[in-house]
Length: 212
Image (cartoon, rainbow, N blue to C red; front, side, top):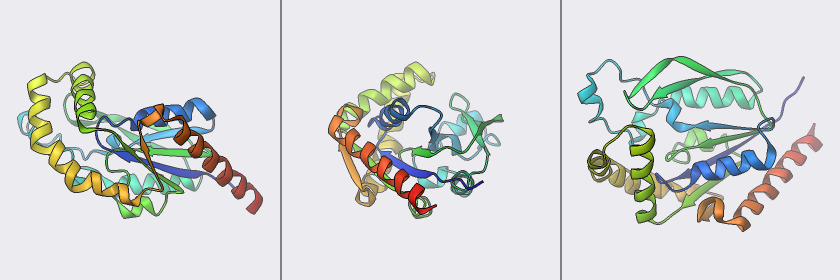
C-alpha cells in the first residue's frame, strides 16, 4: 500500500513558541493525522562523561544533535515506515534505554531550534516555518520552562543562556530563518499565519492524492 505524507519543519529560538505551533496543528488535524518529532530527542548521548562535565556541554551547537539518526528516521517516516525515536533525560543529560515507537502519519511536524539549520533536513521538508519572538520574551519563557520542568536553578539557566544559548542563537538559529517559507511573529497567537499553514497543508495533501 502506498503512503504519502508531508514534512513540516518549525524552527526558531528557544522559547519562541515552536511547540505551541506544533500543538496547534495537532489540535487542528488530530493525532491520527499529525505526529510531532522534537529535535531535542536526538541529542547525542554523552552519558560516558561525568555529570559535572555534562552540564558544561554546549547543547545549542549543531554538533550536539545526532543528525545522522535524525535524518535517517525522518526519511523512514516519510516513506511510511515505523521508527523508534530516542528518549532523552534532561535532568541527567543522557539518552534513555527506552524509545518511543512512532508510526507514519499524513503530516509529520519537526520542531526544534535547529530544525531549519541542517540542509539535509530542509531537503526533506515540504513547508519550512520560522517562529520569531522578541529576545526578552524568549528568555523569560526559557527560565520558566527549565526551572519548572528540568529541575534547573535560575542562576544556572542564566549562565547557560549567556554562555551558549544566546551566541549559538545568533550564529546558527537566527540565520536559519532565511530558509523559511513562512516567518511567524507571535507564534500560535498569530491566527492569520495558522490559517496560511492550514491552507498550505491542505493543498499539499490534496495534490499528493491527485498525483497517485
